[in-house]
Every structure is written in structure tokens, then in C-alpha cells.
Image 1 (cartoon, rainbow, N blue to C red):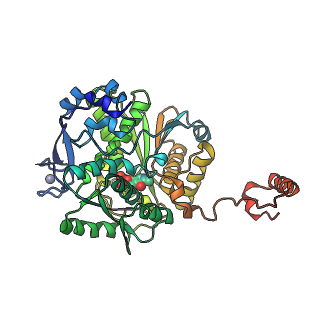
Image 2: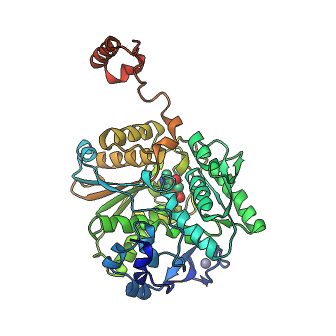
Image 3: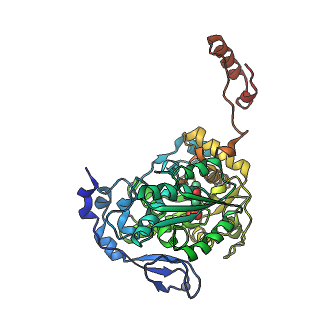
Length: 434
Ligand SMILES: *Cc1c(COP(=O)(O)O)cnc(C)c1O
Ligand SMILES: [Zn+2]
């Protein structure tokens, strides 16, 4: 069946009506702009929810494409032909072995380590941003990235035939750099941290008229993260979970999962229910966790120093809103150190067969910490968001995992190695000489 046969349920009536300041409520036209002219607050897309309600039902969503575009009336694009590279509808896996290990009963992993096309949740936000960029007439798209966003922007721009120039800190992991270059964009490796890259990009956005997905297109871009909320609700059988745990970089994804759940309640797709929101940061870059811990409603920027580079934003744009969501939902925001992050990566791999990157290791380690502190009830249906793929951050594991057993191509060499491996503690495998 082609997508076209479903189009009666995908009406062309646009459901998004304005950009609205999150601080003062001032409204703006639906252009490429992201800051309020009066109070400098961030702009967010506002919708006509009665129009959405008329367009969607559980059945219309289920009849839609097997991607984020099944939720199109909730997304800020007017076209009936969005850029659809199969992004979204990633597995929601019941994580029984990890649950048992931690002492939980109903634990799920939302596995965006296998999101299409570039194996991170960023494909969601970029699919929306580039669809909107095309509608607004941009021919060159760009971003300030901690790695995954550059992969995603370059790949989806290539698919859409848009020119692309991305900016990354020069010290990123090899997998993230190659995973961008392969799509043929211009790549600027900036000698500085993400926050410096971001500042430079704000200046370029003002002078070059490019569509920066996370700067002037940010209000549209960030809406893509709501699909992480919609999918979990749909995959749980049109029900909300009790507790979610997700990583925090700028804090956007965290607040948009919350918005997604609220919207599903608003239009009657799921029943209202309190959902607790807990956030994860790396200790080496934890300005949001620090603000939460100290009960502050402002963020003190930090200089990042952690292996979790993809979430290392020292001055997070949506940090205060993330603190607010955790507070008002009776959740928590915790941080873990680099050793715990590596243990988190290994724990998820060994119990569930999912290889995540450092951001996912951070999230699993925070999950463990929250359980040990009694901050997750074993009976709660808990969903953990795994947002990126481990093959992209292999450097982080150097010296932390076993080496293969090298043997001669002979049966007795194999038998001797097997014998030794069984008598040695697994951690000593790497020392075995056959
Ligand atoms: C960007 C990113 C995040 C967090 O994104 P924000 O919306 O900025 O908080 C989480 N995980 C991974 C793997 C990312 O690349
Ligand atoms: Zn304002």
C-alpha cells in the first residue's frame, strides 16, 4: 500500500497558527525566528487544538505512515509531502532482564539507537526542521551540533537535495565526524566547545540567510521531539506511562515529551494521568542537575568535561523549563560520572542486547541511581529513552571492555583458549595469551 491511499486522513488544513513567546505570550508570524523581540524569551509553535481534534483519531494515526509523519497534524508543517526517510516508530522494548537486575517490574526501553536514517533521536527533529525549511524557501541548511545533529542534518539534507553546512566542535568522536562527512556537506570543525560553536552559528545565521535547524528554525525543530511522547503512548496501547527517564542536553527533548503527552490528553487520544519526569546528565556537564539540586530557577553555565559529548551543553537553552517539568511532575534530575556512564552502557548491552552511546549510558546509570535511592517505585511503568547508538562513540570504551581471544586456526588452540577462558574471571580475558 502506498502512502497516497491514506491521504484522506492527512488533511491539508494547517493546524499550527503562530509562534508564541514562552515567557510573555507575544505572538509572531510563522517565519524562521526563535527569540521574542520584547523579552528575549524563546518562541514555541502554538496550535489550534480543536482543528487537530477534528483531524485525528487513534484509527487515523494507525492508518498513517510507519514514521513520525503519522502524527502530522501535531507537527508544524503545512505540506502533505513531508521529508519522510522512515524516521520514528522505533521499538519500545520490554526490558525484563534489566528490570530484574535493578529490582523493577515494568520497565521499557524506547530504542532510538536504531532510529532512521542516522541512529539517533535527532532524525526526528531534523525531519521536521528540514521539511519546514523547504516550506519557508531555504536552499541551504545548517546546524550547531554536538555530533548527532550534524549526522542527521547532513543525511536528510542529502536526501532532500538541500545544500548543507554544519558546525561541530573539533574534538568529536571519529564516528560522528565520518558519519557526517560521508553525506558530502561542508563541515566546519570549530576549535572550541559546543557553546562557542553555537554562538558562532548565531552570527552566521544573521548574516547568511541559512536555515539553522536549532537556531532560527528551533521552534519547528524542537516540536519533532514530541513524537517520542506520542509513540510511547501509542505503543503502550494508548496509555501514558507512570515515569519517564530521559537525557538532558539543552533540555528540549525532555520538555517536548511532556508537551506530547499533554497534547494527547488535550485531544482525547489518551486518559489524563500524572507522569513523573526524571532527567539524566553527565557530572562533567550538569548545569540542569545542579540547578534542580539547589532549587534554583536559573541555570549557571558550566564548561563541559565528560565523555558524554553528545549531551555536553554548558549553557542549555531549555534548562529552566526542564527543571520546571521535573519539579511539577514530582520527578528528579540526577548526574553520574564517566565511570558510571561506561558501566551504564555495558549494563544495557549485557542485559538487553542494546548498544547505546555515552548519552544512553548516562541515562541508564541515572536510572540505576534513582532506583537505588528509592526515587523510582518498582511498580511504576517506567520508560527509559535511549537516544543514540554505541557504534558512534567507540572511543569511550577503549580499555574498558574485553579483548577477543586470539587463537591459531586449529582445534586444539581453540580448546585450550576455551578452557582458560572458563577458569579465568571474565575481566582477565584481555590478559590471556594463547
Ligand atoms: C542531542 C541529544 C540529546 C538531547 O537533546 P536536547 O533536546 O538538546 O536535550 C540526547 N541524546 C542524544 C544522543 C543527543 O544527540
Ligand atoms: Zn516575550
